[in-house]
Image (cartoon, rainbow, N blue to C red):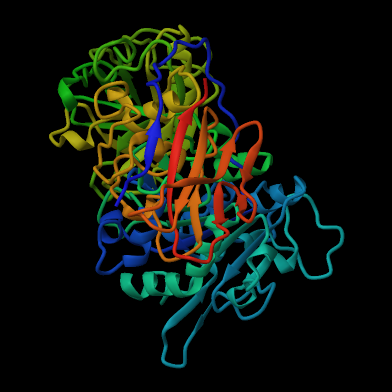
Length: 624
């Protein structure tokens, strides 16, 4: 059988003056499903117990470095919905409802968008009081701790709805999830009960429920400019709080593996930017998920950690009021603490040098910073975590690992002289033996722009001290880590796609338009035109179909520098392929008489005129 054809002259990367980062692609509907208490490795790659979620990952985006915020469950739900925990550190019913603080639901309504939450086994629409429901056999079902929007819900009949609050009917049952998916709100959050969200039930039970209840929406979303997100509140408390997260829907390249470090806060910011809303809580301090949506620039990333790939330029120490002359440069555990009662102040200093340049692993000088995450690993002891806020402040003065409280003349002051007064990011480190992830994107962008890199002061603003593993820690993976995601100036079209898909090897053999690195019969140019993955062997993504006059495929919305021609024949042995439809940027789709073509968000359906068996292929040609 013949394979798809491609014609193109290889494009070179161009040195352009700047990179513009647009808002995330706008979907008509976004549905987020929140599952429970499961580690990444229990789901992704586990095709026996989680076949459906792995199918979604194969057909969409699998995030390998996606993290929850804290433990236990309830604060994570609240953080995702509002960017803050509002003082909630446990699973008890929060006081003071309804709250009046910024949140995703109210921000969507204020921007002219819509929101609704759907909780399985919620007793009735607008029920903000019931703490939980059980079966007659005692199985746990609905739990209010997994329903964050209930904290902002006002009583039925309230009119008008006050700012930052939600009407009773935004708090819906899963029974109210529309059968006609076009009737969904702009953003919907679905929370299964505790038997079906993997909390009490098995991974397979949760996966089966997801297929049965959201499988139809997933397929509909791909053809109707919509998006399904499956994420988790936290891991199973045995790892670094890395959670399975998958995006599936229109415009996404199947089989994409995204290794940029993101958190639930980034997901909140992404939903806000996607819909043009104000920012709630910590979402204002970081940037949206980038590098997977249509119109996104290609995103590359690099990681700095003492001992990783030969890196040796991380410096850290702590200075202590209680030991003002002690040199802590060799300490394996660093402490941040502010306790007026015991006249104790401990401060952590950390710096990563040699970040920028042309050497392997460095960020090029002409990069644009997309995201930067400073990860500090909380120690394993019962008192190493903290219920107080830890803050990162950009340092303004030089320091060395040998510095002490006295040599810095009373420690470091966040006074815009020794360190920036405003924090870059704050986080409550309420988790043991796991990384606390501080977003320092703004600071790393400032370093790249020319500000002197003196690293960060890490403070803990309360008496519950926080202890972290240092660069001298015995376990390499637990040492301070700085991950930087960035993009480079590049010509739009195939060159940008090439950089995004092949990273540092772009332009080399295997990445050129006529190459076929995954040996699936589709050269890179056809993979580019059809929004398939050149590193992901999948016959399903090839545009060769027999037995039907209708073919469905995806057109890459970013592939504006080519002409895409669909050809067909009824007999591979004796009848030549002939064009039936053509797409070009200026004209859109045109077709021969009798052929119909419809497209929504890149999802294309083509029906040819003949009733006989059809065979289709794609030909992509670069524009002159």
